[in-house]
Figure 1 (tube, rainbow, N blue to C red):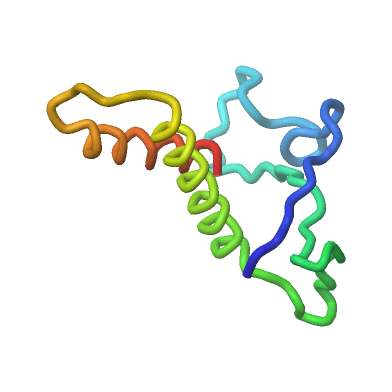
Figure 2 (figure 1 turned 180 degrees about the vertical axis):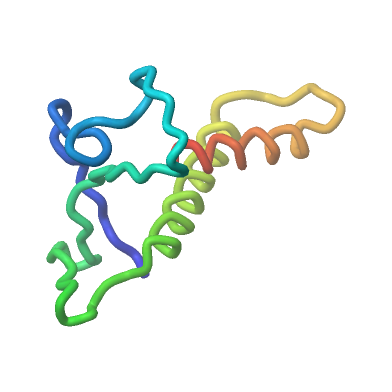
Length: 106
């Protein structure tokens, strides 16, 4: 389930219901809140956008898992080609750091 993600335009978006919410100092005792996070257009490998009405989409969980996997591969390839390792167990440290970076970047 590969797909490409284009980023949405920056700035301006509303936060929370009716533009409010968030960390603006309000004491929200009503319970959890929901905030929409626009992430752009999701495209298939063929470059065409997914058609949600036809059901031809990828689950968000699968898309995020793939993004983490790709970021991990990129992180590993960059770190293995950029430095020599003289630590006690650099592979284990790199693995932990690489996983954290992959999850953040992905």
